[in-house]
Image 1 (tube, rainbow, N blue to C red):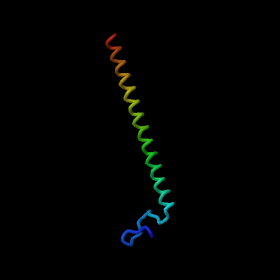
Image 2: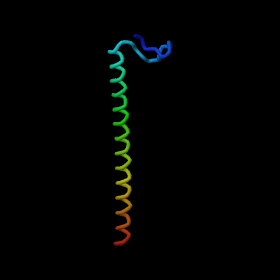
Image 3: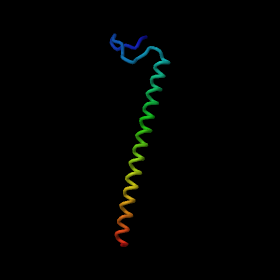
Image 4: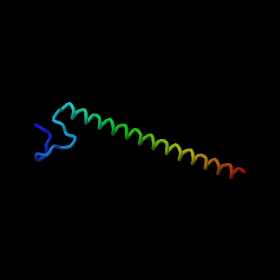
Length: 66
């Protein structure tokens, strides 16, 4: 059986199960890496927000004491 859809070859499809499995594994690795980078970006943003908020809070404390 070949990878067809109504007689048209489906782009990127393969009749070889090994190639199909490798393609799925590659796609899964790509998604995991994409998610990892996204989480790192979020963590950096949260850290920046936290540090900025902390600095603003310290500035306010100095203003109150002074």
